[in-house]
Image (cartoon, rainbow, N blue to C red):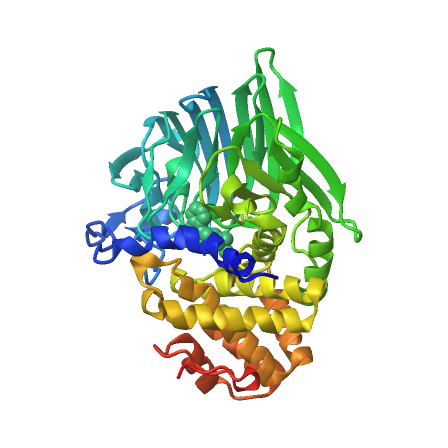
Length: 504
Ligand code: TRP
Ligand code: ZN
């Protein structure tokens, strides 16, 4: 294997990472926080309630994230989103939308926030009654006619129209959200682009199930998360209904519009696969995905059963240097799968591994992004090990080590990413090396036990770095705080003595 071929492997994620490197010094935008004011309501509905006062408060305008305090909202928990999007013009993405949110109040609420950007809101109701609302940048503040009691379910319906606008992410110098290109559109929202097309509690802490109902003019088609349960031919338009029945973080919701060739298969163990390729794509475009079934089964053996009911890839017919692990249907720009078969397959393995690490087990705080990216990056090494043997993995580790040493100054230690460069290469490669070092520290069997236990325990939920460390210590019976401190928070790359790797 020639050197240039190998170094190409690093280009892919670095290509999106480099974009984020030029933006040092730009602070993440913050929204003005107004202190919540207590509203004392004396409900007069039932005779006995007149004796007790409900002290309803506004829900917090952030979910409490340590890097992005304004992302998400507090005071309620969403169970299900139903998005009903009628795209009238694919060239501009001009659409009429209705998002229905089924939620439960987690405190007595006088008002609550959603995250939503752009569009004209034509109607907003809570439990069928028109509610007052105010918009302040990405915060949509909703005041229902009466307070919502803690523990009670409620339904919000927002109707809107317009074109999804471009989102400037606080975290990454790349356009996120709903993006329109010549011939279609796609959605890549990590971490803060979801609000560009639906009102949402935009933080992975509030996972929910989704129904995505999208209507497009013929002959366009839609690829979205979950299972396609219905297609309705309305004459000049078609409606595609997708059900994502497993809890999903908001940034993983995706809607893609184009004309597709859909290829279906299944893994040997029976996981259904559907891949979406732009119609008329050359045959080579499909090759990096040929071994996805084998990858699913292999990773299921290493990490635990594949967490969702279906998987597949969708290729975007537009040059955009990124791929994203959108739940059950990872999406790839062409540039990401045009790096030679081996390099491209490695990207495919990366996005698949995120289905366990990132999608099923989601972040409790964006600061812990290494729990997503380092695991998916290490999975690329694991795929190399599976296909080429342990010596090839060792070689991959050596190359990664050299890469981190060389580029060290542009990286953060994996556990300390800056808010405006969340996806810097440190959370990919440096953290992947940390996982390999952990494997060498505890031995192969214990290491994979740790990964499985961690996945099993936090599947469909959220985890933080401390949760992973706790599992690693519990399963290995070792005290590992010093180990993790040196790998996650030290500015200096820790040594891997077994491979003779050290910083100096
Ligand atoms: N999580 C993506 C990956 O697999 C990287 C990423 C972060 C991204 N934010 C994005 C890709 C926004 C596209 C758009 O590495
Ligand atoms: Zn990734």
